[in-house]
Image 1 (spheres, rainbow, N blue to C red):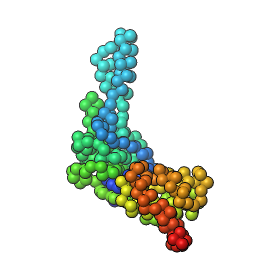
Image 2: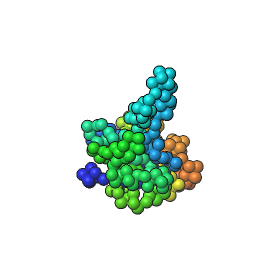
Image 3: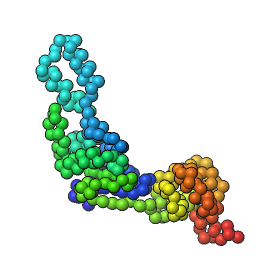
Image 4: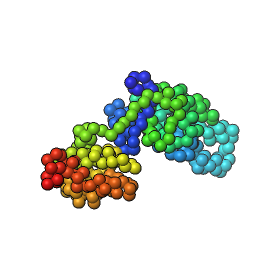
Amino acid sequence: MALHLRKPLLLEGEAGVGKTELAKALAAVLEARLIRLQCYEGIDVAHALYDWNYARQMLYIRTLEAAHAADPRSVDELFGPDFLVRRPLLEAIDHQDERPPVLLIDEIDRADDEFEAFLLELLSDFQVTVPEIGTLRAAQRPVVLLTSNRTRDLHDALKRRCLYHWIGHPALEREVAIVSLRVPQASERLAREAAAFVARVRDLSLAKAPGVAETLDWVEALAAMGEEDLRPELVDATLGAIVKYHEDLDRIRAAGVPELVATAKGPGAAVRHAR
């Protein structure tokens, strides 16, 4: 629907569930260029839209002075396209691609209110005015995805301009399929047991539940160690791959690593562990 209506798609979900990967996959499917703007606190127009290459401008001025060739037209050229540094937003609007690019505005919740307000106009008209050059309009609207980890609430005005989609943690079978695809060197048994263990850990009310990204990192590490299934002592030694808070390590160990591993291995393993 977002592609058909040419409306931005706002993706929300916990960190590590695959929001950024969705944008990468969409660009691959569309055979389009992916342009990514990583948001952060204090990001401004100069970092997101455009800036001037001041070092090159100074060199140009010195060259003119040395050649005694400075004139009004030469000065005007200082603020022409040759000296314009195109940041991701301008690159997505004034693109020369045969197919419209995919613009990923990543972690918009990290930016401040002023930058969010700036995006409102941009996402409505897909045009920008560079005072020294003029107004640049998108001949073809880019496919726009915004992601948010919900560290703060976004303004309703921005949400109204977007379609909304929530990405949660995947079901067990889907996570096993993701692990098998992304870490093909891992055994099927290891992929299933690790995914089941992580799914169980997510129910423990952790400060930061592990996402798919952590599952992949963990399975890749276990496969690199030559492991083909889970063992309690191995899991306890490698918990730092899936949780990143000391309190979360304590919660998992308090819940019982052997019991969690037995549950991940299936009912039969749980019975054997109980005996």
